[in-house]
Length: 238
Ligand code: NAD
Ligand code: ZN
Image 1: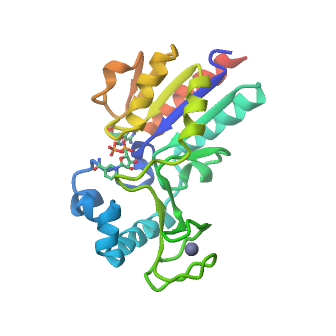
Image 2 (image 1 turned 135 degrees about the vertical axis):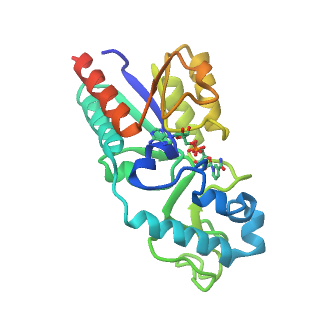
C-alpha cells in the first residue's frame, strides 16, 4: 500500500462548492463582520445575543446545503483504506457537518461543530440544531444564559489536539485540502509532518502561501481534484 496511514486536514475550501463562503471570500460573511466581535470570548461576553445570532444565521445556512463530490470522495477513501487495514484520519477546521453527511465515519473537528451547543458555565455538550439565545437554560447545571455554540474562538485552544498529533505522527502521508494555512496550530501541521519525514501534498484552488512546504500540489476545484486523487489512490492501493 502506497501510504498506510493518511492524515488529511481540510478547511473552508472543501465546503465552498456546497455553498458555504470561505473566510477569505470577497463579499462573504466574514467580510461583513468584525472577527473580534463574533469569534472571540471577549466579543461574546460584551454582546452575547449578537454573537449567538451570528451563529444562528450560520447554522441556518448550513441546513440548506449538501456535501459535494470532495466530501463523498474522502469518505470513499476512508472506507477503501480501512478495508485494506490502513487508516484515514480526517481532521477538519470546518464547523459544518458535511464530512459526516458525505459518509466519513471518523471526523476530528478541531474548531468544534456548529450543530452542538456547549454550556459556558459547566462545559456540558449536546447536539443542538435550533437557534441559541441568552434565555436558554442548561439541561446539566440548570443555569440560564450560558449556552454557546460549540465552536473554537480566537484565543481559545483547539479541540482534540492530543488525538490529532498522535494520528499525525503515526501517518505516512499528509494531505491538506482547501485551507489557506493561515491559522495555527493547523497551519503548523505540514511542518510537523515534514519533520516526521512523511510526504506532503496540498489540494487547493490555487497555490497557498505555504505551497513551498509541500512536496506535491494539485490545484483546482476540490470537487474535481479530490475525487481524481482518491480514484488514483484506490487504483494504486491493491
Ligand atoms: P480560508 O478561507 O482561509 O481558506 C480557504 C482556502 O480554500 C483558500 O486557500 C482558497 O483558495 C481555497 N478554496 C476556495 N474555494 C475552493 C475550492 N472550490 N476548492 C478548493 N479550494 C478552495 O479558510 P481556512 O483555511 O479553513 O481557515 C482556517 C480557519 O480560520 C477556519 O477554520 C476558522 O476557524 C478560522 N477563521 C479564519 C478567519 C479569517 O478571516 N481568516 C475568520 C474566521 C475564522
Ligand atoms: Zn451547564
